[in-house]
Image (cartoon, rainbow, N blue to C red):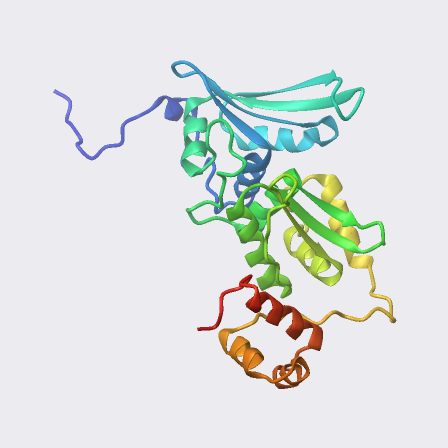
Length: 288
């Protein structure tokens, strides 16, 4: 009788096919971190009956190369198709769609945090260790923009419905650039529109779109072009925003005049006036 090895690893179909399931979607790998961020923002997981279902991403056909990269990174069968149709935004829209049916692959991506069905507000940065800048680049490639404003200023922006992803971008960008942002949903559609301009955009673009990284080529080119911008000599640098503390509020409320408070706190009279009004009308909590 053949011996039994109780601690032996059971051979699976993936092993027989030569599929490296351990490496697939390991988010410490920059390419997979980018891919996962892109899928969270622009992908869709759909359930089917039994083992059926699919993961799909539809984008403008001009960016089809990124779908081919996803296909190469995925050790399961997948397909890329193209179609031309009319939309609300264009009479003819040429798109490309990457589709993956493997249950094992879908399960792995779902476990990482990409839900089935509607997901825009549910998605969040992974809870496992991951390559942060590559993940954010994937999110921005899918749902953000990189380039120049109509005034000619460099910018990097992200539009998202996810509070967690918006907060993560703000935290990352503050560490990299020093620029502080407080996210707030757009009153019209409940979306966060997060924008970085000028030097902050230059530094953020340089950090996210480094040489040789996986990205949409047009956004890589745009990010690299941001470095050529120079601040005009007559353009003043806006001082960084300083948060109000409870001690600041106490000094402000105790001061006999706004001018005296501005002097004591080394802030502008306008800033002190606005803060005092917010405290008076209950728009911010009192210091005590």
